[in-house]
Amino acid sequence: MTAVEARKQAGSSPTGLIGRRVAAQLLAAGDRVRVLAEPGQVTGWPEGVEVVEGSITRPLEYTEVFTGVEGVFLAGAVPTTVRDALAAARAAAVRRIVVLSSHGPEYEQEYPPETWFWLAIERAVERSGMEWTHVRPSAVMGAVIEGTYPATGSDWPDTVRAGHGVREPFLDGGHYPFIHEDDLAAVAVAALRVDDYVGDVLEAVGLPISTRSRVAGIAAAIGREIAAVEVSPEVGRANWQRRGWPDDGIEVTLYALAEYGAQLAELTQWTLDQRPSVPEIIGRPLRGFDDWAREHADLFR
Image 1 (spheres, rainbow, N blue to C red):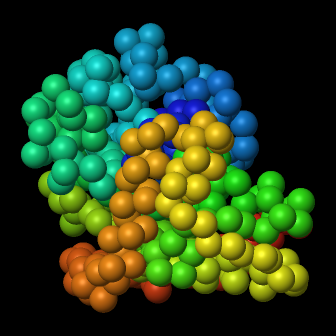
Image 2: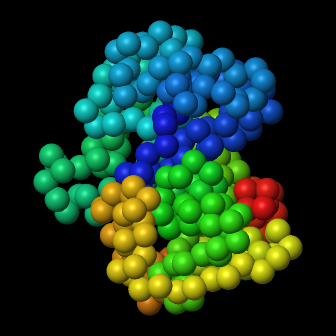
């Protein structure tokens, strides 16, 4: 497994948060786990995980991590060095690569290859000679913990704890799909451990939910009201820019909030129509945002 520092690039998922859940589930299934983790991600792993400090973005410095490995959960790779990582994995007789990807490749394919990011990684894996599965998740509920996407309410722990409430664009009309990190981890574990999903793109997507409903879920979890104010997209953009979010991530977020609000029924049905569905893959219903809010209520107290 690989884990990198939190990134604010559009489409990034919290690799450490997800990776720790993947590791726990693999250990529970009786597997051995080794993780190549960047410095800020070396702690907090379940007991029994072998942690090697380093970075998948510089794979030629850490080729030994692939020795004795059968499957790799590849998270945080970058196009410039992913082929080196894959060559090292194949030389070590790695059999399977499961990619933590993003909902970007389907759009990137309309542009020249030199502009690709997620698609470049996926294509490199497909051509590696190893078995592969791509996992394309929706936003992760717990991304607020690591700070990897503005749509997750990245400033809410600070503003809610301070009693200032939240100020968000598309508070009522906007929706966004979220998946619990436990559910996403279970998809990755299934892709690593069974053969059913080799050569598949798994849409690990949760149902779209409104920003207002997420605020309500947190309020119920902490036992007090949270003031919520809808602001214009321009004000939301400026707020996120002040917090260091890059323009591409902000524009993707605003676009998605508006599109899911305008096409909620169609995009909800698209999620329900995915096969295999996440519940089919993991063998249980999806966990909801209210569950997540109760688990992490202390973030907002």
